[in-house]
Image (cartoon, rainbow, N blue to C red):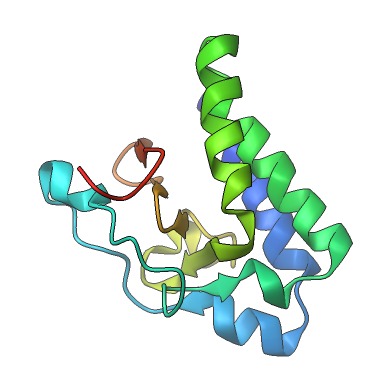
Length: 143
């Protein structure tokens, strides 16, 4: 019953498309700690980020991740969304997507906490105790 549920549903469509090996890479235990702006501190890393790298996904799976990104940016002004998506797409091969099983509301296998992270972008979503999204994007990870 929340206005942003469609974003979580689309992210979970990605998870449903993954095979067993891919799910093992994507599904992690504990989500990041929420610590103000440090929650989405950029690392600049292109490897060894949490979750499944985009390079491990098939073309149709990557296309669905792109739809998730469109959903993430849908509530924003078009010019801001276009700019953000342009920056994200420039590093698409370095993105990783992760789902976190430690906060599966309703114990239903629908992952309520998930993230997409790259060297210069991080989108972290949690659905409990209320919907909260942490988003940080830059043209580079350097401040």
